[in-house]
Length: 392
Ligand code: PMP
Ligand code: GLU
Image 1 (cartoon, protein in one colour):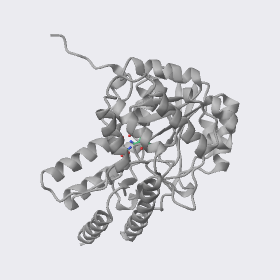
Image 2 (cartoon, rainbow, N blue to C red):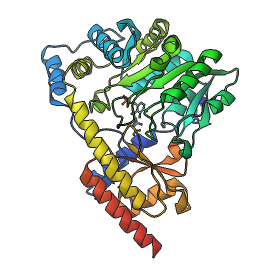
Image 3 (cartoon, protein in one colour):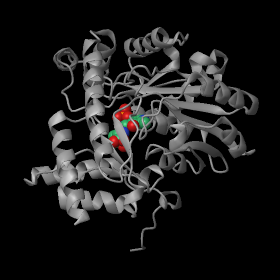
């Protein structure tokens, strides 16, 4: 048999390190190891009861068949009206595409818009999946650095300098994974102006929009510059806000022609997202929002506990993130790449984190604080002991 050669565009596409490490932590725990897991980018609480009941009701009522490819009319309308209420936008239901998670929405939009020869601007540190999602289309990710001393916020003048004739789109992620940075109105305005002038498509990933800690406030580029809506794709979903990571429902809001193109891509790949999950997501968006506020308060408390503890460790530095549920922790002073530090923490302290390399930096380690206060306290204690042993 002829040797099978994988497609060239897969050469620089590896497994998602966040998912791989989360799986490793779970496997170790299952094998009885006393692991403390700080990998998971998912809330530790169950999906709220009324949302689960809506899923069960969908099954009981036999709502278990294909839905329209782009999602049920009810859910598309609910997504559009939720975002319109939150951001003061004016999206029609036809401009909302329901996908199998926000990651899938991103996959669809890159497939619909990008091709070889195109460049897409990404801010570093970036969420691990952005570069592979761009590469899978044959387009080129172009990395624009942000700096710790700027709070990892994009500098509009650096953005301008990175633009070439091939630049097609730029990706914003606020609140951001892995830094938790929340982009302010002034910067968004400046970026919007650049996008307008240069005709760039803005892909704004706002999956953590409900997880922002006061006094920080979530602002969307389509709020500060409504005229940019016709060249923006807004990505969101229920995974983080309602602790629904396994249900796989996310969305894109975009101009009709792009939604049509993405729907065509989706029609030849996954078809509609699971009908049961769509009913559950509808219940999430239209039901009682108290669980969201409760979760946000719990995360804020965990953030404070974790960040305080991390900053007490020698050579470790971590600013409190304004949003999402990650602490992006500077470990450069340990004098080795983050991957080596994370590996030692795993092997010697059974504390599992995600090293920064997959996010574009070997100076940082990411801790998820979507975990219990007990796990946070125990993890800090173990790391404290690890540092004491290391010194001697
Ligand atoms: N964007 C960012 C920044 C994320 O952290 C995640 C986490 N999974 C996603 C998108 C994808 O979310 P989903 O589970 O809805 O696919
Ligand atoms: N986004 C989450 C994380 O960064 C979940 C894993 C993934 O989809 O990458 O951990």
